[in-house]
Image (cartoon, rainbow, N blue to C red; front, top):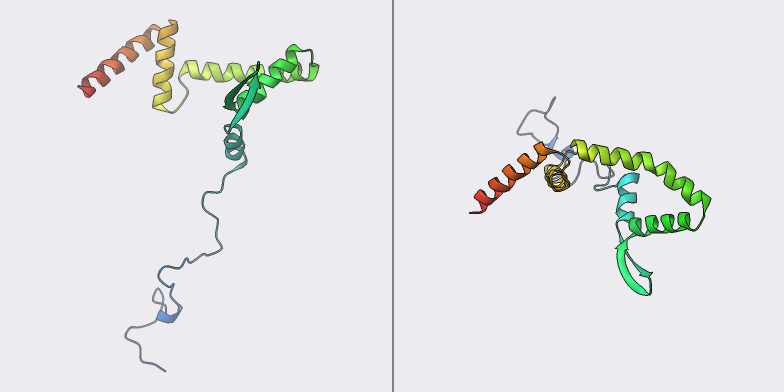
Length: 142
């Protein structure tokens, strides 16, 4: 047996069995950056696609193209498309109400919504807050 420089025991494993530097202790663990289903779907729907509209090529997201097709089919008399649009209305209304109420977490989103609300004259309080933000950003830029 080779002589050890230190005592082996609880919390002091032998040098030969310790983790090697630069190697993971869990090499077959969870892969990094794995997306869930919702994130994957959003990424795919936000991909750009070329669409020919009235003889002109136009670039838009797949989501926009899908909604355009859905609305166009509904207008053409497709009852299934109309039914799907009617089912989407409550979800869209809820999103718009949440935006107007300031439920969103992101401060940039809230600033944009407050500015839009002020432009539309929806809320006097948001106008004052938007002007304060604009004054503060102008002062910081100077």
